Image 1 (cartoon, rainbow, N blue to C red):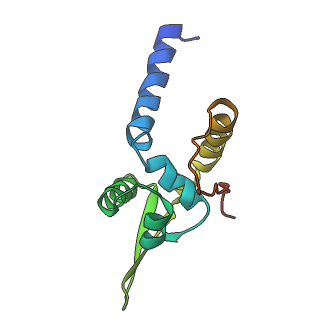
Image 2 (cartoon, rainbow, N blue to C red):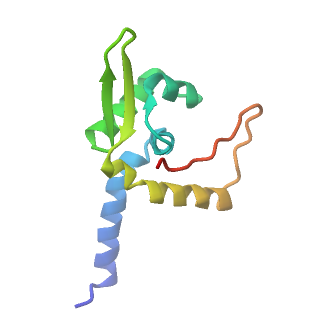
Length: 125
């Protein structure tokens, strides 16, 4: 039996709302895009994302870890290092994030920032 259009739209809206509540937060998409390229240390993420404070990076990484999208590994030191990588759940976001990037390339004007090199986003093998 076919659903009524308004019931189907509400269901879709609820799923998108849940997804974008987490993924739509500032910096979350950028962090995930970087981790699609492979695991990264906290310090590398902090250096690679211009304009993000260490506190904000830490908060976003904690939220994504709590959601099961990334995992955190502490490597004993000295120096103590923390590495982040996508979980299976996080890797499943890869195709959608790459498509979103393609959409942005086609339909959104790039933000011009002098002296900033643009890095391609590729999924890690």
